[in-house]
Amino acid sequence: MERTKIKELLLAKPGQKVLAKGWVRTKRGNKEIAFIALNDGSTINNIQIVVDKSKIEDSILAKVTTGACIGVTGNLVESVGSGQAVEIQADSIEIYGECDPMRYPLQKKDTSFEYLRSVAHMRMRTNTFGAVLRIRNQMAFAIHEYFHSKGFVYLNTPIITESDCEGAGQMFQVTTLDLENIPRNKKGAIDYAKDFFGKQTSLTVSGQLEGELGATALGEIYTFGPTFRAENSNTPRHLAEFWMIEPEMAFYDIEQNMDLAEDFIKHLVKYALDNCYDDIKFLNDRYDNTLIDRLKSVIGIDFVRLEYTEGIKILEQAVADGTQFEYPVSWGVDLQSEHERYLVEKHFGKPVILTGYPKDIKAFYMKQNEDGKTVRAMDVLFPKIGEIIGGSERESSLQKLENRINELGMSRTNLEWYIDTRRFGSCPHSGFGLGFERLLLFVTGMQNIRDVIPFPRTPKNAEF
Ligand code: 4AD
Ligand code: MG
Image (cartoon, rainbow, N blue to C red; front, side, top):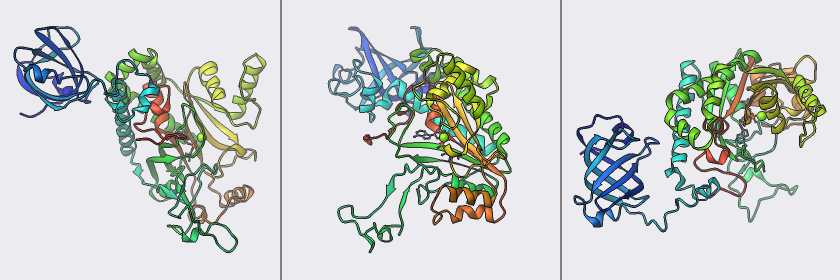
């Protein structure tokens, strides 16, 4: 007999023989009857198995413990109990994998997220992580579908690279040099000519620079891939390995860039509500009963669009009125998450797109404004998250770009290929990067970014 997934069984017509396979969540009952809650990961919901103990051998039933993997054949019948439409009356049970209840890492008594991170190889079997990872899957699909429907080309940019796109020096080096015996040149410096690629290479912090090459050839592209930052930030919003979506569009100015970012995020949130409602409802009811309202509210409103300079004025006024920030505020500072959240949560009560940042706190490639002080950057700031998207219109003038590179004292040896986009048929263009896990924090309402990726990489943690 063929197995039917539990998601389908729960919607199926009663009165047929079925085979369900999955992992036991709970078993309870009395002398005559046992009730098994079975889950196979296809849905947050379990199917209830009703066992007439006279029909199933004791030795088999004894092996049906929490965590065990079993197959159940029986009749799908209308359920008498509340909570489910159908249940299975078991004819036979096959044990695929026993599970010692004493040693099973998932115990009722310790389900803190911190503990679950220490058993990340098992935590996907919990309701919460099942829900989060199904939502993650749906969001990945929705992202591809969104760009595909708009005619964007999915471009795979390299993971191993020579260039530090963001210029923040937070790169993980990639090398095959013998660390016990590092080759040196005559000057005593590390001889990268002997390294695998013949030069110093790292894991990418962003696919943008290569994305721009794609956009200035194919028109509109997007990347969606792993991204690495060796920043030592142990915060609930930073990972050393995260996934980023980076659209890059020829002929878009900063306004069109903002329009796309806003439409994109709203589309994804709506998609989640339309396609992941069971999982979102579970997270809403279990952890944060404002989640669904928060998601709905984002779809229906216009994001605030605000100049950095205006944002600073609001924050300075807040300080004058008695708000205490850990970090000082004045024109020129990089906004901290506390500042971003003040603007979004306290002042406006909705997402804010902040533009016109000082050029000194932003990357070299951003389009410079006439004032000589600011650039056409845009950060999308979200409630509970802070920055969810960072982007900009790009500097398309060869001369201005070169001046900025020189001003910053950047090495040009591995940037000439990038500068060629401005030498040969330069065009106005824009793009942005959405942190996939930041989006998931918003959509799931989870508090810690380590809990929206299956296997988080953070300082001192690369297990599993
Ligand atoms: O603002 P960032 O650094 O921008 C870029 O990398 C640009 N090259 C994007 C572009 O214009 N194509 O990063 C973009 C987004 C952030 O807004 C944030 O959502 C996410 O990436 N992000 C991180 N997410 C998790 N952990 C980290 N350490 C992150 N750093 C950035
Ligand atoms: Mg940023």
